[in-house]
Image 1 (cartoon, rainbow, N blue to C red):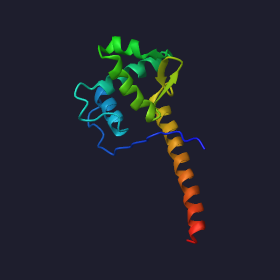
Image 2: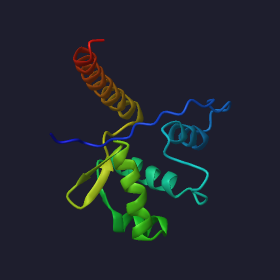
Image 3: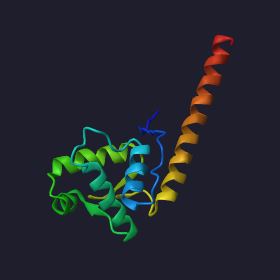
Length: 135
């Protein structure tokens, strides 16, 4: 059996009061558990925004290109990309990376499907365990 590891995090926090795209993107990413207090220079946010731009242009981007654009080390970029891939937001195509879909609503739709599949799998296994335990 092959297990594909994906971590889906949803943090229920208050939406920003004012309509400011930067604040809403910060809220969006924080709600998905992508950004945290330890990321002082907002590296994950910056990587996410660049990947969003590349998805909009339908142009996957390499880690070296991201590092150059953001003035970050390639190691830092890889660390953040791995986190985004683990959450199911970013995919790897050859030596390039791109958001899984080309817009944020579709991204949430896809994550919702992933979450439903995970819950369905858990229910199936729970039912089998309950049957074996006579519950």
